[in-house]
Length: 278
Image (cartoon, rainbow, N blue to C red; front, side, top):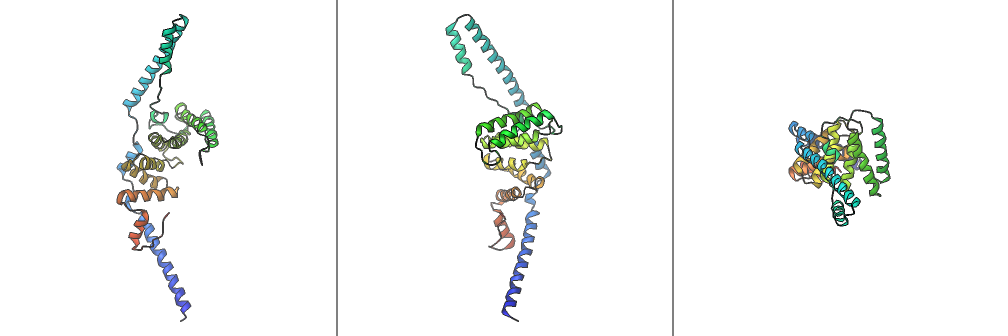
C-alpha cells in the first residue's frame, strides 16, 4: 500500500471527523438551554423595560397643559405692557419669557403606550413616512451619517407618524427608524424604549428590534439581566438575522459563564483549535 494512499485516507478521515464534531458542537450550541427564553422572561420582554407608567404620563400631560397656559399668560402680559408703555415691566416679562426652557419629558413613542396595533393602511401616514425616509436616506442614516440636521428632521417626521396615525401600519417602521436615530444621538434610554415599541406594536415586524433593544440595554445601559432575556427572545423570533443571532449567543454565554462562544466550542470538543464562529 503506497504512502500517498495512506496519507490520503488519513487526511480524509480527519476531515470527516472534523465535520462530525463540528455538527455535534453546532447542535449542542443550538440546543443549549441558555439560549432559550423562559415564558416568564418572554412576558417581561413583551411588557417592556423602563416604560413610563400611567402616573408619569398623567403628570407630564398636566405639566405641559399648565406650562402652555403659563406661557400664554406671559405673552398676554407682554402685550399689555407694550400697549401701555410700561418699559421696565415689559423688559422683565420679556426676559422671563425668553428664559423659559421647554423640555419634552416623554416622546411620542413613550407616551403612546404598548397597546397600539400597526394594522391600518393610511395614505397620509404613508406619505409622511416616505418624507421621513427621504430625509433619513439623505442624512446617510443606513450607512454613515453625514447630515445630522436632516437626521433630526427625519426623527421629527417619524415621531409625527406615531403621534398622528397611531393605528397606521407604518408606526412600527417609524419607531424602529426613530430608535436608530436616538441611538445615534446617544439617547439610549429612549432608543431602547422605541425598539421595544416596535415589536409591541407589531409582533411580526421585519426589523431586528428585540436584538437592538437587547444590545442597547446590554452595552449602553448595563442592564444585563433585562438584556439577557431580550437576546434570548431575539434568537427565537429574529433568526433570519444570522449575524445578530451569533452575537446574541456570544453575549449570552459571556453573561452566563464568562466564556466566549469560541471557548465554549473548545470546551465541548476538547480541542484547542476549535473553529471560530465569527
